[in-house]
Image 1 (cartoon, one colour):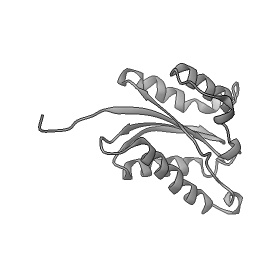
Image 2 (cartoon, one colour):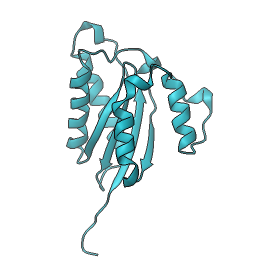
Image 3 (cartoon, helix red, strand yellow):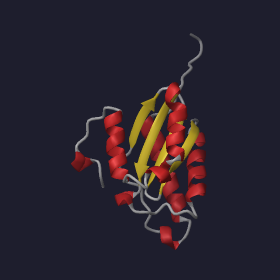
Length: 150
């Protein structure tokens, strides 16, 4: 085959350090747009971005030339620096060390976009920790509770 083609969709989840409520309404839309720009700069496509004051969900189509870890490093490093420029209230902004990334099929794309869009509504009933545990179980990821939070 003379051409390399791919469609790899991933659901990416990461939170603020200690789940601090640092993603305030005044920066949230611009943060989501900034994250989308970083994804684009990495040669990938941001399909959806949402979350609450303490975490982000993204649906991305990965470029065939980037490692997931490189994409996440770019997202977290560049966006953390940007958030810190948004005022004194954000001087201590940090993302958690880890992240969750899960592959999805094309047939799951619309449902995940709706899920990401409804994050604020969803989190009136469930904490980020409960949600993340449920996601890990859904995708069949084995985890040790003492190592998933910082």
